[in-house]
Length: 287
Image (cartoon, rainbow, N blue to C red; front, side, top):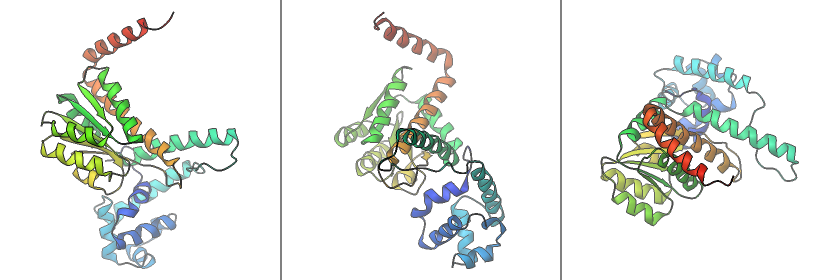
């Protein structure tokens, strides 16, 4: 179950990966959010130009056993959105003054984390932390901006004496994946979930028996479907590459959760490692 469940965010993020009929239902719901809690299944089917059966299938696709529980969740999501009224993602605009830029970037970061908590499965987080705890090695895979997140993860887990490495180019990723075993964990980081280099390496890692953790957006993708532990993020639907800022902060937040989870589970030992590394670094600073 998601940490702060919000079905409207889930619909927004999964809309493009739904079947054509399910997409009709999704688009109608998103365009008429306030009306949906008052509609019968038949009225929603008529409004979306689908059928009762199609609406029910859509509810099940979104993780609900029936229409009633789906509608209750819609109502709860609307209440949550009312509290956040006006807090929308904002893209970079030409000529923005510095005050506007500061406010918009700050707001986007906060919303990226909040929306991610709406789609992130706490059971999957717990499963990933358990795998990381008991693993022999951790290998992080990411391309481009996702590669920076992989490097951040490597830096964190190295400090608590976990044998780990980040691989950020296709060739090294293939080599690393071929050396993984069932005692290892492979963490694949990709916003789209469809990056060719990531998928090629993931297939090799899976064949070798490694536990696969995926950090990717909440949508149907090859990466999300093949992961043993799927950690979903939610990112803004805005037009230009400022969107990468949202996905990056959401991915970094999940990395921090994994790190904190592993560190907390073996706190006394981890505390010794952190103290050692901090002392070494402190001694290198100019006084």
